[in-house]
Image 1: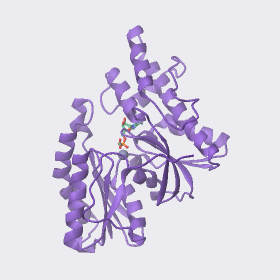
Image 2 (image 1 turned 90 degrees about the vertical axis):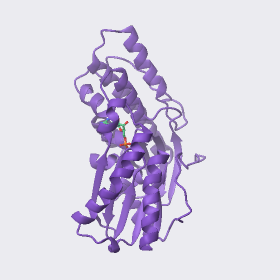
Image 3 (image 1 turned 180 degrees about the horizontal axis):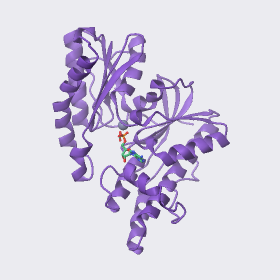
Image 4 (image 1 turned 135 degrees about the horizontal axis):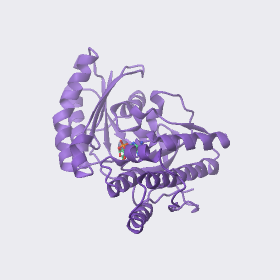
Length: 332
Ligand code: KG4
Ligand code: ZN
């Protein structure tokens, strides 16, 4: 069996896959309640909690699947990008276990794992355009295979999820902001406020969301009697329009009629609806993992891990975790 571990941020995820690639089970421990009073993730708290939780979660996974630790024949773990303290916990644990059990260690990139999560539930043909939208990242990829992820564009400042979280903070809605904004937006007028759509017409496949957040802040200052539902609805639609139009632009540019959307923000209901609508209009297939696999989890690490196990793409015990994304922009 393959054991997969994800500890790049504030979630501890572990998963088991059998030798033939079937997904057995995953367990997830979220620290969100711990960080909520601070209005965002506190890295020091995140890594300490990872250390406390990870061994127990693995024991629980083995127990619930009646697995003996000696049945583990490979270990896949997220090496980066993410919070370095949190990453070190998972990577050190995986290295130690790989050494003790004398089984291969497999190095997984967190962004590639997010974009592979779809394969837990669906077969998608390569190549596809991958949009990764989370709290830490917003990026577009041309995914040719499990070994070939080409970065087409990324955010120049805030990630989409970060924008949701920051706007929620301005509105005193608490952390994380995405689900709360989404809920209030359902009751608002989406055309009430014409917030900017940053870089929408720019041919470069990059994003920018910090100006949009500032536009919300300015609106709130000038309109103290604002209707919170309208702000949420108008903001949500501005983010969705940029994400969808840019991704469609990439799909048309590379003539690839398949899109996979992944990451925490991919669980946004409005984004899913509008994406599917636009996909249908343009004869483009749009895929989303179920909400369970949009956020950080161990199962997405296992999907890619199993593939690398079978292709004998192993890491060395000398390899170090990395905090920043490893991708260079693909020249197109
Ligand atoms: O992928 P994820 O769990 O963690 C990172 O790797 O960042 O993403 C978390 C982000 C947070 O910013 C959160 O506000 C956002 O995803 N999010 C949402 C929704 N659910 C989570 N954003 C918009 N709408 C949602 N329904
Ligand atoms: Zn993530």
